[in-house]
Image 1 (cartoon, one colour):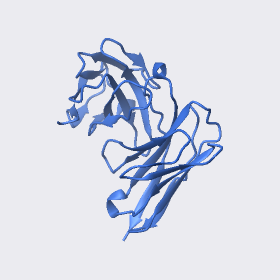
Image 2: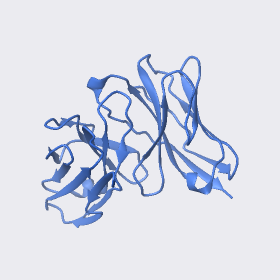
Image 3: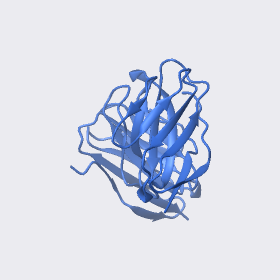
Length: 113
Length: 113
């Protein structure tokens, strides 16, 4: 699976959009981009995933660049409950590979009032 | 629908003692996983079970054994605990396939003295 690079931390203001970048310059054509988050002391929570098109769900939007070498997770209206560590994960889309996830260091997001 | 449950929530062991961490899911998922998370680090995969009756090593399997007891339950055993195994252990499950998200339990906090 491709390696990802994320900033170690970022702050954002409550009510504003939070834009979390992720670099995955070695991504290959059959690899998906996943985002999970981990609120303090809890198990990680799935947010969203995508292959090459932009995706949106009730939690967030995922913007993937045309060359797929980077992506941005957007939390449209950050709340204090969005304070968490956010993990960008790239994994191959083959059932034989299982659904194994490789977590890096993530981005620690602090939403401030 | 409880999702993924883990027992115990907390455990303190002395070096050399053994114990089994229990995990159960009620979502009829085929695949189950065990991760560990050391302070300030991302999660690392210990073992996984793609389907009932199969188990495979992950990134850090040494010192651990697993049993996929049935479709619902996946246990992790430490035969001779060491201080290096002090960590938070998370169990997860997912439907089998290439893009299904993982659902995580609340974790077991293990201290080995």
